[in-house]
Amino acid sequence: MPARPKFELKPGPATREAFGHALVELGRENKDIVVCDADLSKSTMTAFFANEFPDRFFSFGIAESNMAAAAGGMAYAGKIPFIASFSAFLVNKSFEQLRVCVAYPKLNVKVVGTHSGISIGEDGPSQMSVEETSLACSLPGFVVLCPADDVSARALVRAATIHVGPVFIRTGRPKAPGIYPEGTQFEIGKAVEVVAGSDLTIITNGLLVAEAIRAAEALEAEGVSARVVDMHTVRPLDREAIRRATRTGAIVVAEEHLVDSGMGVRIAQAVAEIEPCIMEFVGIHDRYAESGQPFELLDKYGLVARDIAATARKALARKR
Amino acid sequence: MHTTPQQLSAIARRVRRQIVEMIGAAKSGHPGGSLSAVEIIVELFYDAMRIDPKNPAWADRDRFILSKGHAAPALYAVMADLGYPDAPPDQLNTLRKFGSVYQGHPDVRFMPSIDASTGSLGEGLSIGLGMALVARLDARPWRTYVMLGDGEIQEGQIWEAAMAASFHKVDNLVAIVDYNGIQLDGFVKDIMEIAPVAEKWRAFGWHTIEIDGHDWAAIHDALHEAENTKGRPTCIVAHTIKGKGVSFMENNPKFHGMAPTPAEMELALKELQ
View 1 (cartoon, rainbow over the protein chains, first blue to last red):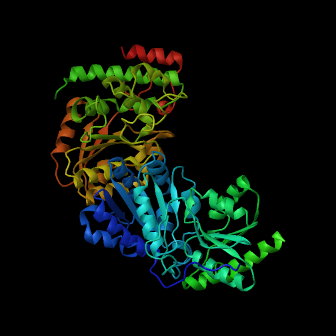
View 2: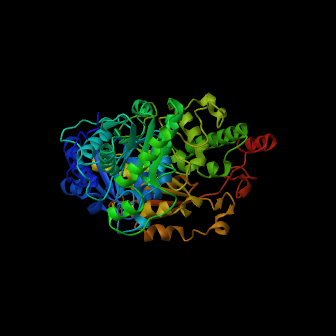
View 3: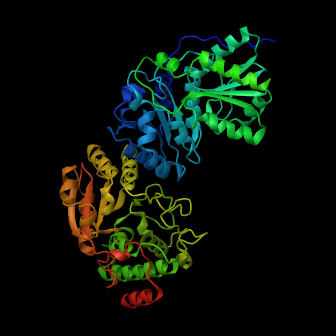
């Protein structure tokens, strides 16, 4: 039976925009939510929250370390602080504060990185975050999320708010193709099968879910039935979804992150524990990118449907 | 003042003895910076702060953050003396040992009555800032006190927090710098000069008071002045003596991070009779 995408891709807003809107909605429902930003509120979209709830919005200036530790203080005092900035600055610059002032006392702080990956585009490598999934996943107790589109981003920001404990949410700058119908339910730690398939499984998240769906369509034309799984929660991984993936006999992990420190290696560890299986990886290989339009960069650095399909063929060849 | 200086001095002596015994028993720790902080911590916990040791989770309690977390023995000795439920006096000498609630640096997982886990220098003032912003947002009366080491203010994050606290006008936040002049590698002036300290805090917009950090009346008055200062946070630059109270530890960089030998401990306890 040929694989068929369950969802039609349509143009949609960026996941950072979804975050900004979700925050306002949640802010209306829960007075304990406070929001901190480091001079990027117009880009992280926390400005929506700041406009509606100026008393609960705190400007920290360009000082991410202080912001992250102060959020720890707010959580100690009973609030649910959201801190936002570009992923590259938020996680890298305040990693130590996330460690000692958030993760170690296991505080209820929500860390939202925007402009993640290389798809920030024109700003170039100093603003590009290709390491932070690895860093966030290294912190005990942290939940790490990477939503693919507007609907899932809004749902996961809500789920992160309800979850008691530290959460990192990885969002992107460019408009993200809409994948899920309004109202789709998402649960932290529960992956979503976006395309059914049985010959191999492509596990991905974020912006690359849409690319993986396109790759599955290309493979379908060749008679290959590729499953696509949106692993929106990188920590904790959905081990049942990984177990089911091993039963297809080949797994391709695709992510907009350094390939040797992101989700792929974490899934490989789970696969090694669950059931050994052929695996191939799509990601950024041991280098920094450059300026350009988001999709020019995704194309050059090997992160588009063509690359995922080619890697899938390689995995299938090893399987046979 | 609810407690007389004579009573406070007796408490301080008790706390100092305890510090020496704890670190001696642990065979590691930081006696110098624990001893220099004693009067300030005692004055806060026995006089200035609105706290209820029997009800440590009281929402409106004043908060204390020991940003110089290596002075934990001083905090533990005071908390045990005051009868906090998670600070058993008979276990003080298990400091730093496996299974002890008295961890090497303050840890809320083991002692929930402590207001923040600390130990990595430079971070406590930011935590205190977050707390102070919440108290103001919720229109609650509680105040936040953060104790900093002098070497600690070499950390850049301290100045991020200092800038943000005056910008946000958190007058319910007090920083106290334990200015004992010594850090691990030697005298502060030789490792990385921080002077002029008071001028720096003033330049960052803080109401700044310089005092003798072993003088009860001076500490009391400075904390009182901080409470009456509106529109900006207060920094108390407390000139102290590293190793205060034990002659051979005073002003001796060796005792920043070294436990006394059994013989030294005996001598020290004799001096602290």
